[in-house]
Length: 282
Image (cartoon, rainbow, N blue to C red; front, side):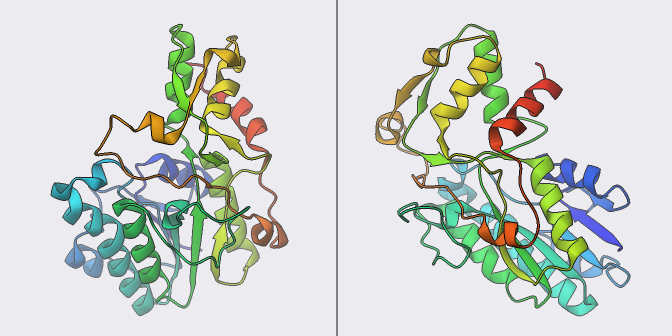
């Protein structure tokens, strides 16, 4: 397959470059997908698959009205530009979504077909982007959570705090599973290589759901600290003095039955965490 990765400079984009070494990798400098003319004029005729890893991901900054146009451009308009391009060329679109499209009030793991009800500007933009991707017949909408890869992320932050002797306070009532970009990229490749039916798939790491505080404690223990050095606080308490912060869903656990039935078995998140920390010791 002839594959193009857009947003190739981000955490997931870098993992996709490793998973699809023959792909054309385009960062924003190479193709700004918010620019309708640039997308329209790109040479799509010989492209079989477009992997869209480009997005605005700063959920708190998205709440600033001054950023609304940029958020919508990256998470909604750009998806529409790509959707029109691949509909014309006949390529398959793989688009990455988020559990932030949900309100986190579902009782248990959230299935792919649960109705969106976003709590934040970022969540609304991702839900609207999903609608754009859905206009493409040949599409995979891949929904994920708590992404960890190359670059700045929660696990790296906790590693630095553990190594510096700090004892952070971390939210304990938001529950989900980390998703390591190597596993997410492998799941995407599985969908494409097996010709799985088009549609929406949840892909995260597997394992017992955990809170952000649980993940932080696991990092601390891996770095030789006690998990008890991580303080625990509610979301309401943590954000009480942060009025500009985005609302977070408390339940971020996605149902993995569909991707497992398609033949892909994501690693347990704790196993993936251990491998990540071994490969990224500092």
